[in-house]
Length: 380
Ligand SMILES: *Cc1c(COP(=O)(O)O)cnc(C)c1O
Image 1 (spheres, protein in one colour):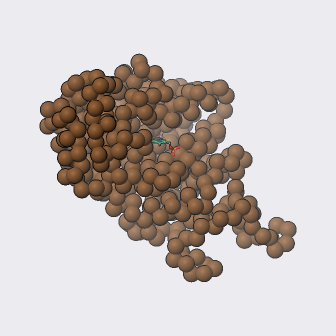
Image 2 (tube, rainbow, N blue to C red):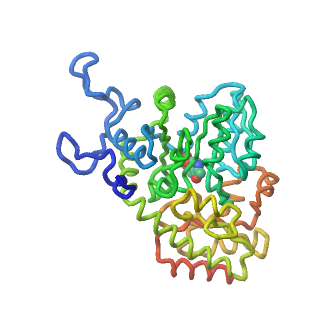
Image 3 (cartoon, rainbow, N blue to C red):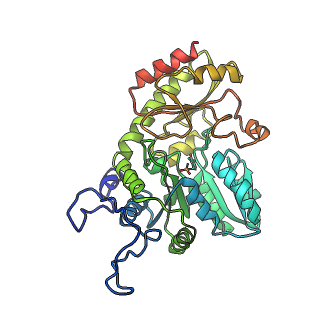
C-alpha cells in the first residue's frame, strides 16, 4: 500500500457493529464483561479504547512500523520513553532541540538522575566521539527547530548501534509523509501529532512508533501505569486529520519553497534557513532522506534586533503570531521569546538563534497571498 492510500485505509475497517464507515468515537471509560475475565479485548479505557486502537494501527503504518502507541501529547510520549531509563543513564541529543524536550530532560528527569547532554550533530564522527558508556539513548530531531539543520539519520543510527545505544527520532517537523526514520534503522519515532499529523490546530496528541515488541510492551506498561492516555475524541480528530496528511504537507512544502525564494532576495532579509537551498549545509542529506524539503522556513533580518522583528511579527495578516506549526493556516513565530524562551540566551546564540530570528510555518493558503502578506510587513 502506498503512503497516500495508507492515510485513508491502513488499519481502518467499517465499524463491525454498525458498518459506520468512519471510526466511531468510543466515549466510554469501561467495558462490560460477560463473566469475570471474559471480555472482547477491552477492560478499562486507560488501558485500551477502540478509537485509539484504530488510530495506533494507522499511525504505525504511516511510519512503516509494526507497533504504535498514542499519547495525550507529544511530550507525554517523550516522558514515557525516558521513563524506560534510570538513574545514571544518559541521553544525548542535539543542541537546537525543541524547547519543551529540553525542559523535560533538564528540569524534570535530571531530578531523577537521568542525565542529558546537547551536542552538535552535524557529523556522525563528532557524535560518535561524544557517546560514552553511560549513553543509553540518542535523541535526534531533524530538521531541527528553528534553525532547520538536517541530521543524517542513517549515519547516526550506525554510530549509536555500534555502541548498543537506542535511537529515537522526533519526526514532528518532517511528518511521516516526508521522512520515515525506521527505514534508516531508528528504534523509535516520536511525533507531536498536534502538528502536521493532526494538521488543523485543534488537538494536542503524541505517538511513538517502533518495530521492537519489547519497547512497545514497555511503553504500554508505562502508559497504563502512569496514565498519559489520549481521549477518544482526540483520537478521532487525529484520524480525520491524517486522511489529508499527504495533500496538506505536499502543498505546504510547495508554498514554503516559493516563500524561501522570495525571502532570499528581499532587501530586509539577511539570511534564510531552508533545507531546500543548495547552499544549506545539509542540503544533500535532506535530499537523500526526505521526500520534499518541508513546510518550515526561518529567516533573520538585516536589522539584527528585536524591535525590527517585533514590527514584522505584529503586522502580518494571514500569518498569525502563535506557537506551534503544521496546521493548514500559516503561522509566524519568534523563537527567542516563544518556543525557545526556556533555553538560556548564551545557548541560543551559540546556534544562531538571535533576537531577530523569525520562524514561519507555511500553511496551504494561496502562495501569492502569503508572499504579499510578508512583503507588506517587511516593508514597514
Ligand atoms: C510540539 C513539539 C513537541 C511537543 O509536542 P506536544 O504535542 O506539544 O506535547 C515535541 N517535539 C517537537 C519537535 C515539537 O514541535
